[in-house]
Amino acid sequence: MLDRRQELNIQWQKFLDGLLLAAALWGAHRLRFEGMPIGPFADRPIAPFPEFQWLLFVVAPFGPFLLGLQGFYLQTLHKPLWRAAAQVVRSGLWLALLVAACAYLLRLSVPSRAVMPLFAMLASAVLLTRERLTSHWMRRRAASLAMREPVILAGTRADTEHFRASLTEDQRSQVDIVAEFDLAHQPVAELTTALHTHAVSRVIFAGGHSALNKLQEAIAACEVEGVEAWLTVDFIRTSIARPAVDLFGSSPMLVFRTTPEVSWALLLKAVMDRVGAAVGLVLGAPLFAVIALLIKCTSPGPVFFRQERGGLRGRPFTLYKFRSMHSDAAMHQAELEAFNEMSGPVFKLSSDPRVTALGRWLRKTSLDELPQLWNVLRGDMSLVGPRPLPLYELAKISSGAERRRLSMKPGLTCLWQVSGRSDVRSFQEWVRLDLQYIDQWSLRLDLLLLLRTIPVVLLGRGAH
Image 1: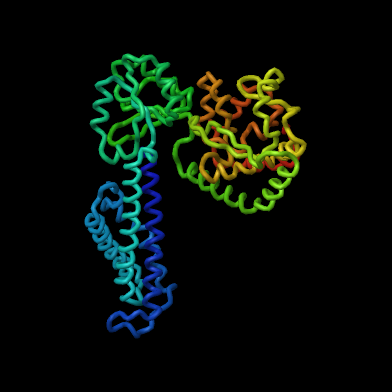
Image 2: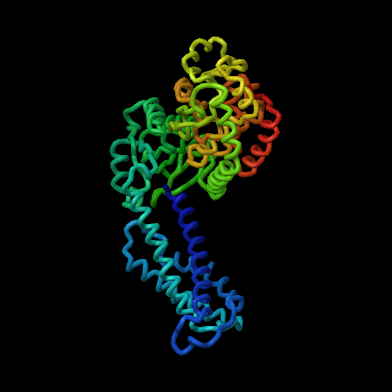
């Protein structure tokens, strides 16, 4: 997680804390309203919650803002509990002054003074609990290499050593430097090989002032691969599209991005994927059972077909489909290679003799793809994205531009799906459609492709 993602994480924490503060205010009112004994006011009835609602417009937005001013959302990894508590107390005092000012200037009232001390105690408890849980999660992330983002560090030996030494403990918890590339002595082809081997999403270039020509060549290699290039230099002359300025710690960097940058829209896409997949699996469970029974009754073999495919950055994952071929189909693949109807590394055959009678109908209606909702729920795939290729086909791709389709998570449907699927005979055209999707991505485009997929599936257009 680099700084832009950290900024989004802080924004999410502030939003969550605003909800927690609102819930704490409601809870404090409920405790007092239900007659919880509190000093001399225990037996006195209080006004209903609507009389207190104006406080929500103060505590929910301004509470997280004041916490942020006290540094509550910074240095979470190793922050002691006493420091977090002190920040909450100081923020609470400022919030109390703000409430008092609003009540005085706007002539508002707090019908029960006992609600506010209760609110202070509940709010402190829930905020510190949330902060401790976040701190625990970040420590687990720091301790586990699997939870860190793998990156490649490139530059001269002196520059990379200086960069490593400058990293703070929080920064070290965010990234795992899986490989180093010596900009002065190694050919750029070795960097390309490292990108394929380690499946990273970005390369950090430390310095590089003494090898600008080599640096430009290395950035170009990242560009065609769809991998972000982060530079610690202040500027560089380049014609690469969509440059952006970002920060890693205090180091300014130029980012040359050919994929959508981390944003709330991209996070919403991930939420839509999980929710959509969960709903689809629940609603489709009866249909799944019927299809599974038909497969078992019509041909010997397992119900599901499992295959290792290349996911985001080429990382392998197990893809699930309803089996539409005879169980020995893989043994006859080589015999049919001469009849391949798709150019490039992909194998497509419209009248594949290995497909069962039921399988032809499943493929025509795309029902064989439904188990991939489980892949979407697991996070291996998205509802919309480039279709994933088998690993043996992925290994045949030599062009970096073709591999750039791996820079976004694979999906159930894509531009290729709604453009005729098997009617698209050229792999280059397939890649062109995938790169068009990546370059023009938006939530609106995802929703449009999902809507366009429905008639394509119902009519069976382009499916074999």
